[in-house]
Image (tube, one colour):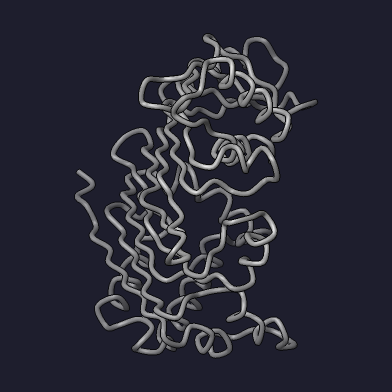
Length: 309
């Protein structure tokens, strides 16, 4: 269902100015659906809000020609700076805001009873999403002020970051920036009390354990390999306390329970050019081949297990 996540990116790129009328919000909503190749039904029509931006409630998204799943959204607000250029030539907006409440993924198997039960079950599984980002033209920096995902229960993901050497003055400039931009800094905070198992485990486990006759043994082997890789990491890339946290987190997998915090400090940036030597290296890649790519980068990791009782 690749079209469904794309609707959020599209909405950011077609967001209204402060003076937008409801009709403009409706036009943007329709255009976003067509670009993301999704169809949408909603309880209420899109409307402009006093503070600027657009709001729509009671949304159900399905991919064009697809009937295997739908995404339900309680309410969705979007706003951005740079609408005229976006519509004219595709230039990305220079600031964007997105707030989605009650986002639910609902499988559809064309069985009336099961579809009803899946929909009813999803009501208590809504996810709230907040996104705030801006481009600082003089500094050529793209700043992610916050990306927050609130999951059911005490489960959260929060991300901030700064990307250098970004030019959003035109679509062509933005495309050229992809080869020069680099992540300067980032901070990721995760509270997982079931989040890993419910949303991440199956995707990773299916890939890593494919064909394993003894999954427990395979997991133990993977953990040993991960510990060996951590031991080879340079001290300036991962300091002693972060190394201890990484091993503690590894021990708790596949059921981590607590708070995970990761920081990235890369004054010269982490961009595509760093990975060119690795791409040119023939044969299997070892940790010793990978770590030099991150010269000048410092990672900070902390894992604080929570009481499971």
